[in-house]
Structures are given as C-alpha cells and as structure tokens.
Image (tube, rainbow, N blue to C red; front, side, top):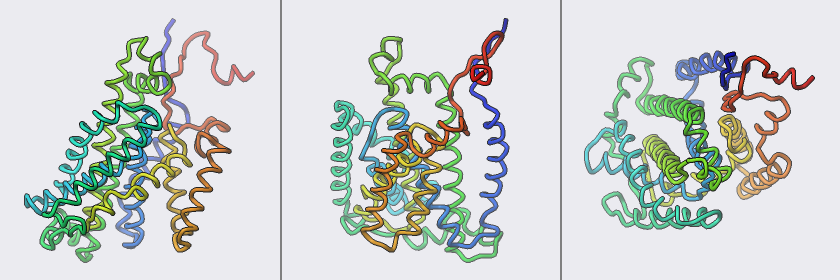
Length: 354
C-alpha cells in the first residue's frame, strides 16, 4: 500500500493558473497605466515585501520585532553610500543595501536574542534607535539633514534609457517604471522563497520552534539555528526593500529612513489585520491598508486613530486576521503548507464530514 504526504489542494491549482495571468498583467501594467498608478503599485509591492518578511519573523518564527526600521534605514544608507562614495549605479547598489542589512543583523541578533517576549520587542526598538543616532552622525551623507542622489546617477541609471526608448516616455516616468519592475520582481521572489521555505523540513522546524521551543528541541530541532536563519533572512530582504524604496525616492534623511511609524508600525498593522502566520494575510492586509490610506490620509490624526481602532477590532473579532477568519470558514488556502497523508484507508475531509 502506497502512502504519500501532500500539501496541494484543488484551490492551489486554480491559484497557480490565476497567478500566472496576474503576473503577466502586472509586468505589462506600465504599457497602459498612468504614472500615478505605477507609483501606487510600487508602494503596495514594497510594503508587501516588508510585511512578508516581518510575518516570516513574527508569524512563523515567533520573533516579534519592533526594530525592522533599522534594516530599512541601513539598507537605504548603504545604497546611498555605494552611489555617492563608491560611484556605483543605484540599481546594483540595491544589492549592497541587502548585504548591509544582513551584516547589521549579526550584532543586532547577538544582543536581541538574549531577550524574550516583550523584552525582545523593546530591545529591537532600542537597537534601531541606536543605529539611527549613529547614522545621523555620518557627515559624508548629510548628517542629520540627509542628502539626495547625485543628478548624474539618477540620469544615467541602468535600463532607464532603454525604457524611455521602448515606451517613448520621459526619464522620471522611466525611473518609476524601473523601480516598479524591480519591486515586482522582489515581491515575487519574496513570496515564492517564503512559500518554498515553509514547505521544506526547515519550515516544519520553524513552526515547531514558534509553537513550543522546548518541545522542538526535545525532538532534535536546533531552535537557535532556526531563529538565526529567519532573522538574517528577514534582515536581508528588508535591507533590499529599503534600498529599493530610497532609490525611487532619491532623497534620504535619518528620521525618514529609520521611521518607526512608516516601516514597522504600518507593517505590523498590515500583517495583523490581514492574518499573521499566513502568506495570504499580508497580501490582503496591504490592499486594505492602501485603501484606508487613500480614503483617510487627509484626516490627519484621525487617520492614525482609525487604523488603531480597526486593528483592535480585528484582533478581538478575528485573532488570526481577516484571512484567517475567511480560511477558517471556507477552508480556502491559496498557499497551502499543511501536510496531508493520503493513501488507502485514509479518509478524505469529505468522508470525515459524513
């Protein structure tokens, strides 16, 4: 008798087909969408990347960090340093941003992993503030007031001239399209990479560590190693996103690059309302966040209060987020990672319901 373990569901097959079509539409979007739409999609995609990596860290690794703005900021400043001080093109300099986030994560984790629970969260925020204060002393990059990318660097950026020729547009619009395509590529790699990780044995080990560290260690899981892997991976991806965001902005300052509100509080809101511990949750959450921002951004402090009230309401009504509530009631999973045993004499979910 043959038995097999599978994670596939009928909905996931349909999702795969629809995803291919959606990606094709997103790639071709600059051919028929205006510049404002491209900028909005860039914002959605970069926030989605940040949310997915925070979700990997907290939702799957159990490491609730409130200091992810440190990796956004250090990635952005590393990209600026590579362009201004080393003469690199901004596009390959994004890779330097990711490397900077990875390097910073080593001492960051060394101190933060000595703390647990709320102390870990507070500790990451304090460390992020220390990094911000240190970067603000970097006079070569404008100190506390910040600086801008050189005009020749943005004018001669890789691929911009080709996009101008292909679409017959001006250089600023071409730079926005380039940033959008890079953000789309980063989002696809992020979602695909996290999904692949969660389907491997390391994904099972990570879930075990999150649920019960002592029990995971008792069956041979190296909990410390898994936490390091998740933390370093999240820092790398967040650094890449930071470099990309500020390549598109072309202007940086310590307060903006290390903003707790922009790069951590909003990200946590996205994951919490969408559904922590799921890949689908941040996707739903970022769409809701963008819609709320578009509708309420002109209301000042009421906008932030509305976000807070909504987050509290969702946590009370649906602790697993809106996607968790939807999945619980319908059984729908677009990115299934749960293992199911199939074979002779193994009842299906339909049989069990009878």
